[in-house]
Length: 292
Image (tube, rainbow, N blue to C red; front, side, top):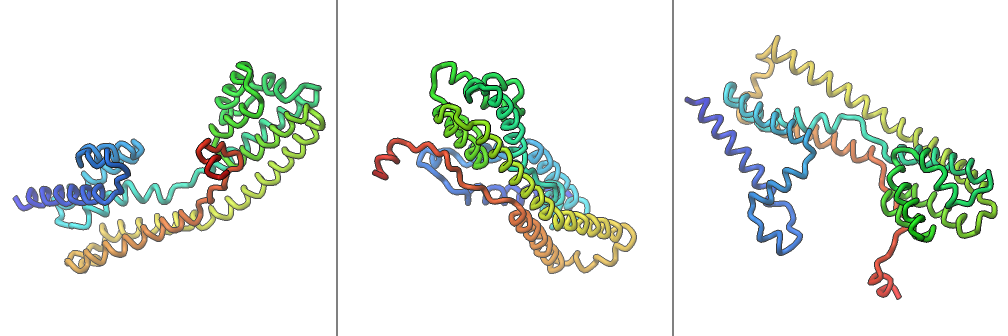
């Protein structure tokens, strides 16, 4: 009977925590204020990636089971953190900047080779569309369609810049705008210099990413060793953790776990490259009038 009460209490604790988090989130508009708390919570929940939702749901369920059968209250929070939060903090980070630069480098090489045959930039764009890297393919196909609809090269490339939303892509597209407006004079030389610049930047960013990955790799190793040691201790020497069964010990465990997760989050934030400011930003007419 006590196990059933513990499970009910755990479920109420989880519901209370979730409700408090949703209630503390900022409300942006009067229309959103009129939406019920349940609907807002459902929208927030759907905004979480699906794999993360599955892991979080499994973690909460397992945490309730741990509380019901062991009476270990911190398990309601620690188990979901272990299953859902910790893998996200320890996984290798994607490098979108490197992926974009690699795609731009490949595209500019193909475009340079086409321009050297005597084609203009719009002609080279059309003839090389089948060789575009997957990351750029959709945006470049849209560019060719706009050029066929009699868009200017500047407007078409500006639209590509807005779709890619990348500072590195902006620098390449701005150079293409200048080359296109000059009528092809020195186009191959400009594109070759641009390709060399991209390769230099790509080399530097790869070195920086490799240096940033070293402490993250060490942290992953330390965390796995620590978790393995704790699991082995629980199996072979459970008396060592007897002090954490007291209320004060459980509170201390929650504080220490929160500090460790917080340090992992801080490390991940430090290792995340800062987003560079774009240069090809299309101003809204109202903004232009305000600046004038």
